[in-house]
Length: 476
Image (cartoon, rainbow, N blue to C red):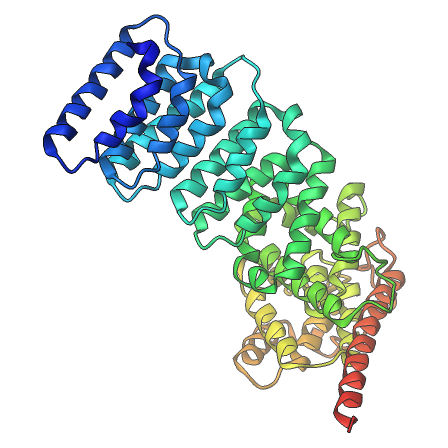
């Protein structure tokens, strides 16, 4: 009878939904008997029945779906490598049932999904990745969180199992993964980032590809940057090397995230420059607050010492060049790296920067961060009144104080500064030419010129926008 089962199995399943109770019971008994016979048989052709089960897994009737997914589960246990050609079809059925409204169907589908995933992960047989990935890519668009989560776990497993083969499909897979970063569920976003991190580990090329794609996504979707930017970057720093991530992001942002133009190109559109400024602001806030970046902060603190590793100094320089798109972030980076000579000069250049409400809010936030444990070393250095760079540090902080309106931040910083020894107060605004605080590892004049050029570019772009707006309003 098993040889003829594919011919009437679909009909039996359809009887499970018959209006007559006796017919339903008889069909259920027959289906159960056939499944037991399949379990006992040494030779069964599973292939002809797979399509029937897949179709029944999507049946409107609850009992049809439950019975079909139970059969799928048994087929996976019994069929093994005989089902290699049908992996994608079976996976599609499982993904459909894994988010079923019925809890029993969801549970069976969940166990079935684990069975199939573990079998594929452990098999030494070759199988086609393309059909599986097509199914998984489609399921990433599902309206149900469990289905999207299961699809991401499958992709992650395949990336680990078949790295070489998966390389061929990254360009096709990446757009769907990037879209999933906008998912409403945090657990989906975090699992998606684990997949992206796995792709990044394939090679340096893939690492750069992923980061470039994320920056481009942020440039096109500012709301995603605002709502999920911090979560995405912080979790990537946990999964990957934070130094490499910040170095690469800074290098990308020094060019154009969209057009890859030169950072010295004064024709960059205002919206692109604005994006860079916002992105740098986000990266700076993460750098100054996230516990995941402790090692990166320690590296930057020592990056300008005379005996600092070359890679640490290069990291500061590339980040500084990018951070110049945001004045307050630039100052914060200089203070973190203890580049107080450069910080004092940068504060002086703030007189040429457009002072907006947003700018003042960033200054206010920086003052709050100066009171955090991240800057405890800076606060203790305020007591080292005999240090060669003490007056430069004081000048930086007093310059910051002069930018603030009379507010709680002003009072906080002012109170902090008044605790410094009074004999030094007379000299805080004098920039001594003999100060040894200017670190020998960097060229201050060149870095300061880079800050000025970048800010001039932003100013010209804003002026061009205002000119265009003015012309448009004058048109009759």
